[in-house]
Image 1 (cartoon, protein in one colour):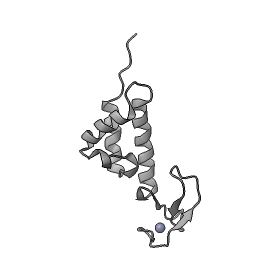
Image 2 (tube, helix red, strand yellow):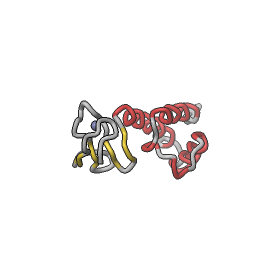
Image 3 (tube, helix red, strand yellow):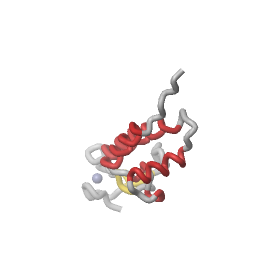
Image 4 (tube, helix red, strand yellow):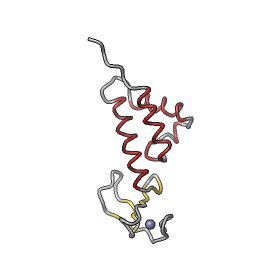
Length: 112
Ligand SMILES: [Zn+2]
């Protein structure tokens, strides 16, 4: 499999990827492309996904809302079928929309 950015032959990385071993471009760090279960991605995209994930997790972790329920709402918000609604598969623009979604649906502070 060749890197879509620089054309180098992608190599297996044993690594500590969040999703196990993955293919990385041998030109790293000049080229930041990897390939895992969710396809090719570059570093800016992976950073955006990390931010989107963190914001999304803050929506359900402290609340009674379940993750599955929030993913359902997110899919509607994104206009995606639920089967395609995975932050790990999102591009940078979609990640920005997850951040906007997370702001809109942030759990309200309980008045005491
Ligand atoms: Zn490359």
